[in-house]
Image (cartoon, rainbow, N blue to C red):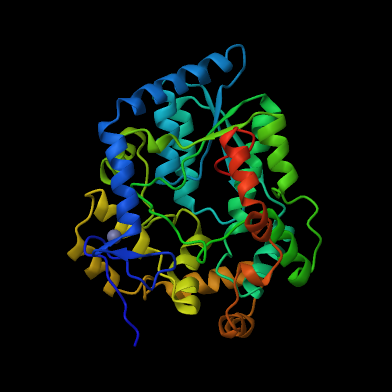
Length: 373
Ligand SMILES: [Zn+2]
């Protein structure tokens, strides 16, 4: 009955939400080929990128900084910052400190900004409020438990942009060659979702947490003209070369896995999501690396056979996380057993998007609404 189809190229299958297999090839592989074709063959890319860099420099004349790069100490953001400076841009680095940084990631940030001579602004979140919000998302029994950090980062970038009159945020997330597309069912985010989950499960009001509501998106993009640029989609970018480059140039330290620069993210991706929801993001990530020739399929399948977490350290990681969130083992076990829910069980902007999708597409085409928000 249950006919799972497999992509013949990557390791995705039809059980991953949104993955459709046609003639043996999945839609993510197909999308990749189209983008890659544009990337390799189109002269347009270089022209578009050159003009963009020129424009950033021009608009930033007489300003202290001409662009912003969010930094986590991770690979992609470190490389984005390096590349921006190499192109002659004058970025300010912005870091959202949510209390979960690994020691390596903090050292990485410090090494890179020092060597590049870039200023760093760090926003330190109010821990008691943020902790409460993180626990609320765990209790909501949804896979989107990381969005308080993701939204907090975005808000901090936007606010810094407005503070310094900067128009360009160089965004390092979701590079199509190294990351692939995470299904909406695995990670959905918006500011209204944050508000509604906290209202139900929170014990504190969100007073200082930097949320991003629809009105904020309008303010930052339409009124203030802030743009988000996915710089890594324009440049040749291989995961292994980048690691070597960062290590050589900055004595940068690897932390053992995609997005493991945060202790919480590591725990969520390797334990919480696979054990509770059967979500293994390595499938998406390895598939992206297979497509861009950075990993072969056999090795990926072998890696996938192993548990996503390190069996020797997982208990330690778990007790660290629980202690920090002030959750008992019993409370956490109850959370693990709660019936699974999704963003559809809560108030989000998604219903608006369904309703006003055409209007938003129109505004996007007129550049009145951001393509990434
Ligand atoms: Zn595929």
